[in-house]
Image (cartoon, rainbow, N blue to C red; front, side, top):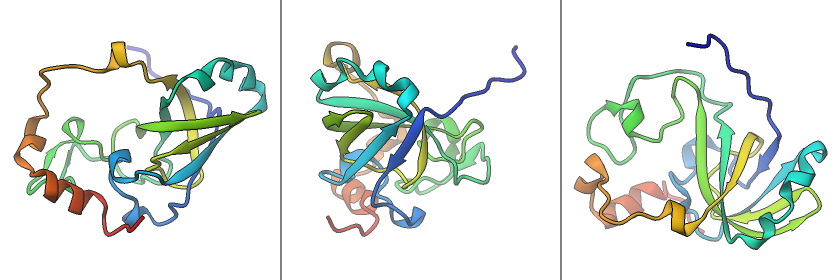
Length: 162
């Protein structure tokens, strides 16, 4: 196994979210919340053709996560779960991922919506959402299936009023 893997941020994500405790838990609870992704100019050529996609996956570093847990009580859970069965930031590698709407691109800035990311978060990568590759039928959602949709919305929004 390789001992060290180094990622270099390729930009920064800006959003109205400045309080970690108030960020809605997933993009689905952030409908319409706008943000930007500023890609470092040296990578701007890589943005060509991305504007044809309505949604993108953005990968980022949970730079404010100061601890690592192998078990964690998620916002929708009643008990601790294994860290790899939740989307909490306190992971061994602090890797985050969100599916957001891409509104437009101006030079090296992506204008996005449905943002659930802390302002100033380092961007690691961008990939297009492609329905034929990413959508699946007959999926299971583990312990999440025990949580009602109403409860998920109430708890997932964390008191945020759009």
